[in-house]
Image 1: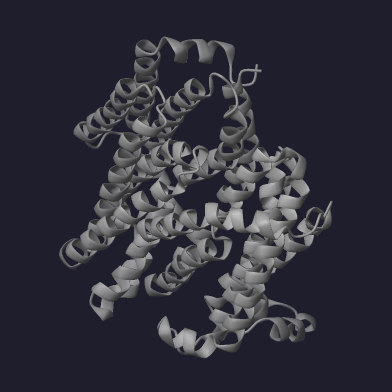
Image 2: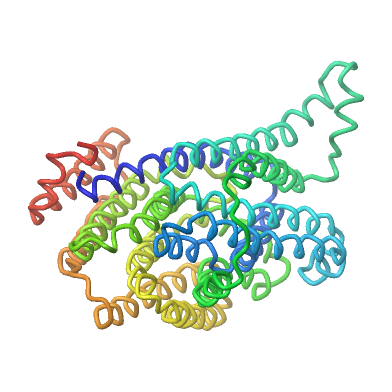
Length: 496
């Protein structure tokens, strides 16, 4: 099978779980944005921004190190897995103890002094999720996409079920339910917890996920290798630095908004910006699904003679897929906007900027394969740190002037600069024949089509939707016209 088609098939399986699961999970966004005030939803946005930082610290590059060392030492796969697991298990357990003992001081430090329980819950969530990341990585390396997808869907289903139970069912039953249920509801539900039930539902889902992964955790244990562990740490720690810098680029803006905007509006603006971020969910889902499939694929493909040509083809198809998602969201924004509450829609102007920013993040992630394959992970750390400096400086400059629009544009500038740096250095150290000209032409074409849509102005609904379909067809035609390889791929199909 064509390796590109094999990657497409794996992406589809991972994507099915991600798309179905995320779409189900995404249905929580209109729930949150209709029952919580913008400031309350800001609490959710802030807490999960902290989570983004901590999960990178708690996995400290060991997932990617696991892929690298299992491919480099195929006869030692079980030993590499056990070493990785024991390392992350030890550090995560220590983290849970620290957050449990010092939950009140930590809560005061992050400005939630009245809610130390948030720290306790998230300490447990993060510890279990970090441990779960390693058996999930093992499933990916073994191409067990169906089991991976199944457990992910269970996780999302439990999380959604918990949210619906605590945020909808319990309040209704407490007010309208039969007397026989009042005792049970009063025992499991406290209205004063409010937004905290979002976190409790996540905690329950993390517990269930870890339990489901226990067979994969205990399977074929081969002991801990100190020498392997030291090598993995040396490989993974630069990725930790890169990961932290990457999280700064993706999540720090929400935290800075809280501290740089006037206190009276800060949490509300964070909530609006966080909800607008969610509107770009389809781009995020695709990139996540692609990454799940592509990382083990890239390492496995490295030994093939035509590996670099395959990487170039992957990049081109990836960009085209992201541009279709961009156009689908932006051309049908009048439909998409209903996924968030009306009070949050004032922030939708940042969505096109965030979508293009995420496209360049995906491009950067594709480009990063050169320093991972060559073991020069320090470059990834440097690129991400430069991006983090750009993010911090531009947010400090633009947030007081432009609010969350400044954050969105800072994100775009950051990811474009990182992609450019990685491309320039990568072509010197590990040249891949990317079709740069066509890729830039595709991006320009999609932006031009979006501009045409804006120039068309308000139209009757039927005419508007008809125009949207014509514009998407125009983009597809342009792609096929300028790229003969794309035509051949379309004719053969990704799964033939």
